[in-house]
Image (cartoon, rainbow, N blue to C red; front, side, top):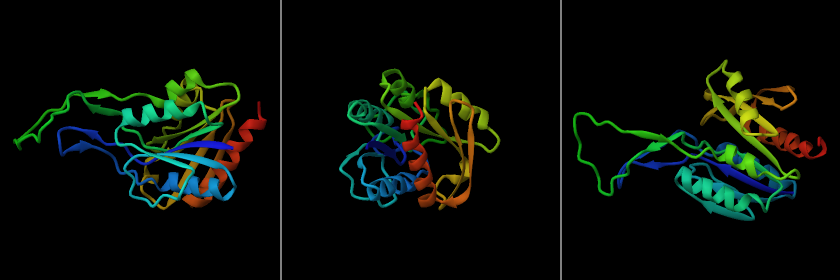
Length: 208
């Protein structure tokens, strides 16, 4: 199987030294990549500025911004059977990027604009023989938002992922399917969850 995997955060520049980012470490992406390699799959990794140690993959593309990640995913997607979007892509970026370091003031107002919705765009170009899997990082209890994303982005599987999971060694998640099925994954290590997710992702190919 040819698997396209994204991992880690993105950084959206404010000026020449500052950026907007998040606390994603890339641990989940590293766990998925490691398990996929162990099972003999060919992995292309698109990695943001991760702090986790990533395994050696067939191809690695390092990016920083959400736009760079979008461009890399769109360029690579057609060559792969499965996309697992484990990256924590920023939802917003500054409307204006300053070329020089801004001086310090008592206050500063930033205008933010939405970043590309990568999975929604992929959903428009996905072939019948391809599968897409997403993650939905939400506050506890907001599983309805994950279901909405599953449908809107035409995903084959989405992981409802409470915010407490970010940068944690453990995962407690729910797998959601388009037919309404749910599979609860009780608290487990990210490595064990990666094995489960990879198995369920591969099962998607026999479900259609």
